[in-house]
Each structure stands twice: as C-alpha cells, then as structure tokens.
Length: 132
Image (cartoon, rainbow, N blue to C red):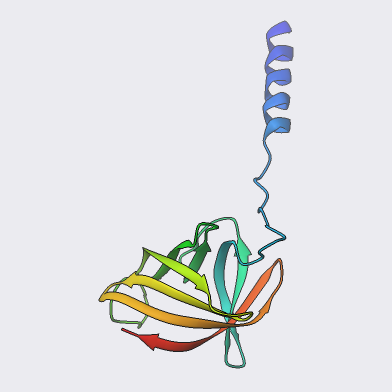
C-alpha cells in the first residue's frame, strides 16, 4: 500500500510539473518569433504565430536579423509538396516593408514583404518584389 501511495504521489507531481511552453512574444517587435502559413485574404498571405514549424511555409524571425524559412524544397509546387528549411536574413526597409534574403532550392533569393497587418497572433503580408 505504501508503494502505491509513493507511486501515485510521484505521478501526480510529474503531471503537475509538466506544462506546455508558452509562445514568447516580444512586445517591442511583434515580428520576432515563428509564423506558420494559415491562408490567403484578398491579395495577402496570412500567417499565425506558432511555437514550432509545421509542414507548410513558415518563418522564424530572430532578433539578430537572421531567419529560418520553411518553403518548397524543389521547383514543383504541385501537391504533395516537400518542404525544407533555409537560412537567411531580414531587415526593416521602412514602417511596413521587410526585406528577406534567403537560400532556396535554386540558389539565393531577395524579396520584400509589405506588412498589411501585424498583431500578437497574426501576420498578413504581400510579396512586393522578387529578385533571383
């Protein structure tokens, strides 16, 4: 009986000590963090904040100006699409424009995102320029 009580106490303690990691949001720069694709709205692509990458397009904006981007791993965009992670950098051009420089399956690419809206939970962007 004593062993069962000790086991129960240990199980309850372990269960109570487990908690899901909360998504950290930098209130000084809402762009920082992980954003996963959630759909289109008019001409804009909508991303939602996440605590990790999914099997879809994603961005991880880091405070040091680097980023990790998940996107197609090949030229074909017909489902089923395979994704890979690519290193890159980002910089602020003005109040609403962010420039992205990143690798992709064919080399390197530079493009700009026009931020239509940005909240703690949602990022809505339009791609303005693509240079290969």
